[in-house]
Length: 390
Image (tube, rainbow, N blue to C red; front, side, top):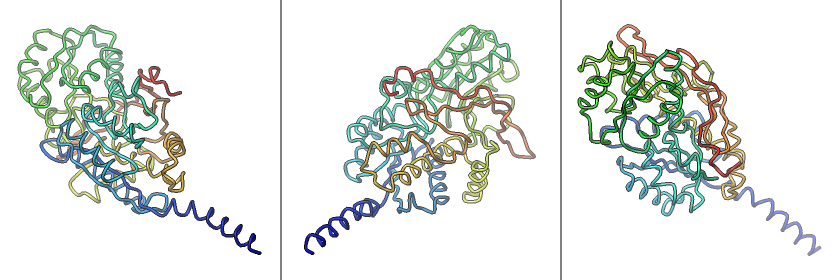
């Protein structure tokens, strides 16, 4: 009888283990820029992450969710400090966010060393796609080279024979210009990297571009710098004279300030607000309802997908987040409905996805981004072969 009771007790204890593993809160750290002139980007990312939580019923895998938002102040050293704080003090299960490649690169080591899963909702430096890829890193955005590579292909289609490249002198800026150059079949007649993020006067760079007499100019400036660049491009008399092509310079956050300056300036993007899948329709409609006067940007769309990705892993592992191999396998499976439609990861945990041509259209007094065409299907970044993961 005693043996029977002991066996029954042991069985009850074993049965209780999964339940105990579930009896917790999913803790997520979110690092982005919530202060200064680029806070509009971080706020959009936070808005979309919160909307995703609403759609999930504020739970993941049946567990309540706690999100700790941290401001990186647009500085790599601060981003690293906030990442370490989330890991060491808050003991989060996942870290999400990161707008800037230099901030992300400064922050990944403490995450990897502690085996904390980090999901980038924007930054995609080439190192993390290649030799620094990690089982603990996933991206719901793109590798930095991919979007400008798509624009390089589009310029080939348009018969552009020469281009002048302009962008900011930091990790993503260098990746963007290199990305265009890698697919563009014409001649790069000049390149200028400007001081980032302090420089907002581009008159010298525009003068050099004008003197080079290229068929086109390619520019990458996110946020407020993109607004300034388009204004100065027009003031320099280049609008309508030298066609402008871009990546990430025109989006739903900058467009309300750029307005007619953005007309006729095509861009490449992996997400546009009018993608016809049902998840995207719900996301865009509910974002506008939840945040009156605002529209979601690609930054937000990527953050929404990041929340859904994490939720899929929590559900798949039944909340047992201490089982790191199981969490990694669930994340890699990407079993969730993405706002961009089909979603799958390559061996380096960057998405394999379509890239679209977007254009600005005036509707009444409003300016909106519309999908014009698919530039490339199922694009996989060019650095994945350097990643030792298979």
